[in-house]
Length: 383
Image (cartoon, rainbow, N blue to C red; front, side, top):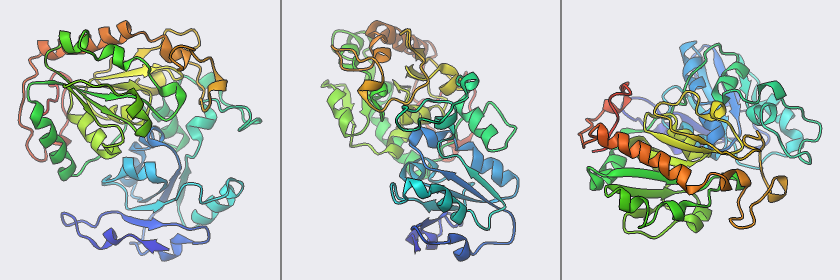
């Protein structure tokens, strides 16, 4: 089993979490060299948003005295990096294990732990609907589909706590870089636009109709937009002197750090927007297949919009176009098509009006201040 070189680096007097790279045959517990005490393993193989729902659990386990190990794939490392309550990451390369052998593999890596929490396909399998051809015999909990995903994850893990937000931690360097970048836009209304997510139902087709010279850039002279997403997101970006194209350029971590210090984050129900829910920055989540309770129930400064489509929310995981109705003009799902530009523009202007009314002027955020609690009446503004 390989060890990452960073297990030998001292950071601010504390060893960073060890990163172990698992293969198919290893029993990593045999190689652990840790103090005597309780050991807990969290197993979660999922996308970025899935991992956000898990983020309160390491802290809760640490408060109970556990040595905390997280077995995750690449999205998990992106979200849980710098979490001070995680002692080790066991990195799992995607598709390294035959799905038919998952149970046997999880049993193997769970040996030696006092507590094992396996959250893989928990929310997806219990609350959301898979295509029938993927899990024809799987039954979701129809009476619970509208539950908050973090609440359900906590219950599934055996915790009584409810009403928690996600927890994402940045290094001082990450925050310093984000604030330095945004320093170029002092006294501007900086909007992070997450143009699309990981599935067809998370692709919003109207961005160029909302952000153009005749609409928001004209009505909001302080507006600066920064787009983010993967390489496919570049297809939905637009040209404007006040827009910075970041799709496929900004990493997940950099995008999330910018979200924390911006003035508004907007996008469909996808990983970056879910991550922004950890912070008090105003957010507009464009909800299609999921509900407000699922995603934004406990968010601060929440301006999210549920699609008016009659099928929304459908509580389904949409992988291919054939799963639901597709609009022939936009080639997007009906739930996103029904969220007309005027609805979204009105909500953005509502946030902008609050920004103006509260005199959101630039202020210096001193090192270390980022971790302090901030009241809703004291909105966070970038320097």
